[in-house]
Length: 473
Image (tube, rainbow, N blue to C red; front, side, top):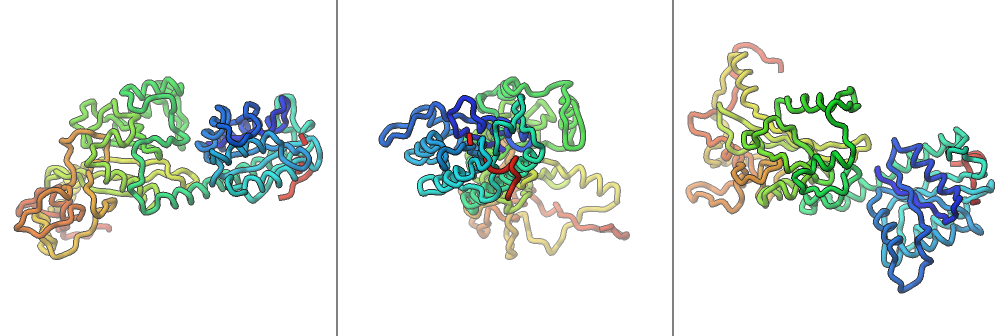
């Protein structure tokens, strides 16, 4: 999670700066906290354009998941400098609207910044600012001149423990608010899904052109990424990067990872020959936006699939690839939503698999055969009075490409689009129905069959103490 902490004082020896720096260092396993200064922000003046420092604060706040404001207390109120910053950021600029905010404060007195925090809360909740200030515990560091050791760390373990609880509560609150806001913005509106990867996320590697064909190498250099014999600690294991590559490239399926910003980050290159892949990809596409690695005809379907995963309408979408042939191949695409420990959508895991070798092996081992079900709809023509089930992930009135993988190759087979002519001798078939998909995938003849088991044996089926309480800088 990306948070920004704003020092509400311009003092060179600010205890609020020390507090935020301690939080950034001590709780970096919980969140990435960037500490921002306000000393270059002038006093607010109506009719004057915001300067560079104001614009910078505006952009950092907008890009963050939440904001921590650390305020001193000046005559029972927040500091004039911080008040001026909020004036700038609620006139022409409005980055605090619906932004989760945590208030903290440090002071040299026992009562400290309690009244300043109350004043700041009222300012932040006023019209034009409209911040979402966390209503729970406030953190008020009293006797701040005695609270830190020479390394800038808080001395009292109870204070550290309470502050950690406050930070965890804030992170949980941010996750809940962000999930609610995101769902309100995109629920039911799959067309709003942005495939350009322009929004960024907390894992985005900035400073590297995502369309650069050498993105992998440049991004690795910028981040000092582990490679070769370097080890990576995983959830249940420790592997070198070489071992990870060996492991992934020998998977019996093609894997693709696209993040929650819709940036295509990885595929397990099981072969150097892209066209021989089940879903052709090119090494230069890694790092590109989902928009640039899909032909236009595919983007409608891609948006709809990602939208369903992002909003948790479903966590798995699956579909066959057109061009499948009975007794030769049956390639399936699966799209699984990925979510972090807080339930936040973090991207899509796509795998592509030819099921026919598995089915063939099963039939050979069990002595069974595939036989045609005479009661099944005629999937060869699509002419059936029975209503076919809709393929998951398909919009009702837009064309879609069955191949979600990164490919600009127009030779890649795709679902029939609505512009395709419908033979006059047959009733019109919804191009997104199961009938149409099966018709496109199998090209079935009267001799081709679907599975029916044939066997003669069964199958197994808020109050703190004086140390962590009130705090005057």
